[in-house]
Length: 477
Image 1 (cartoon, rainbow, N blue to C red):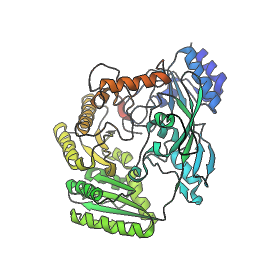
Image 2: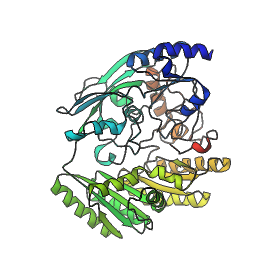
Image 3: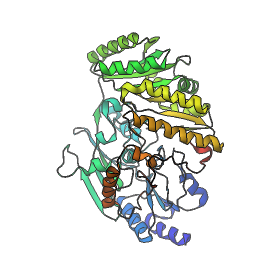
Image 4: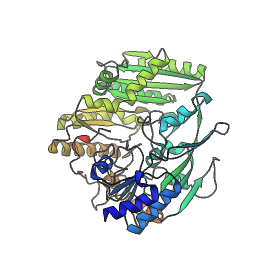
């Protein structure tokens, strides 16, 4: 049976674009989350026509189909929860068009996020969304999860930069949504599809908006003896109507890991730091930098440093963007959460996270987008310890429940996937979920496209789902 399926797939994409041996499939049974599931085959189409043929083939064989980018996602979105076919986009990686005069680009889903900006480095333009994994993650995956990043505060998330899509629907049609203009008539299907986590269609082409590089950029590092003081500073900056391009917070445990790994110049003895980036016209950036210094001094910052060169600035950002990877110096595994809270509740929430840490004995580092209240508590553990693994999943759910209880959300950029789907009733009523389910059924009536994602699969309200033991790969991506 497997040989027959593999031969049929090879006839569609070529024999060198099909993986079916168990040892190969094991490389595609996980992403950056703690979930695992083995697909029956992994295929790598090289055109929209091949994606369409694969979808029709999966329909004929009644197999689930899951689209996969670089596998850097953190909620299980690219995991084949019900087996079936994984469609990888590593061969659909062309930048089809860069139109600088109209500030547009057209790309295939396998284009690596950072590669697009590098392709037009001399033009004075770039692609603004910048997930921490931007050196590896693909734009197709960013579209599926509506990814954010440190500069979300000023520039918004992926949906704010996507103008149109080419999409293969689960029943075998190809549609085009949006376009190169800002406002297309009809329903906003582009907005609906971005962030749908691969449950409504498979994106094969993306029209994105390009952004002019700012005239001036200034990066400041504010150092605090107290996490509460750093949290208060975030609220005070917002209260003064200052909108930095980025406003990131790291606590002491995160700082120690980051500085040991990158030697970027972070103080390991500080309780917390704020990494603040300002962009715009030279005069405006200088004025805002002085306002930021004033706010930090008022909130008892120990020191406020300004990056004195582009190299120093890049080092500081290298430390922040490699923070998750640096956690490997502190524990064999980590589990990163993605709750969102009102900015004014950061201090209160970090105190709650400390209580969870003290009560469970689990070390929790915090490194997150403070400006938009998108928390990333990083729970450190050894995935080989079954009881500790269970504790970690429960602690993560407890933190998310707290975020929702104070007016926040379950996710800011990582998506729901199969990690948080059972917690959706905490945020939405039964009627809310029913309407969303009806929309999904219009696009994906048989539920074979990325099944067991986003929506609850049990009847319980906010139940904690303990995934099967994920082994030491948890948090390693």
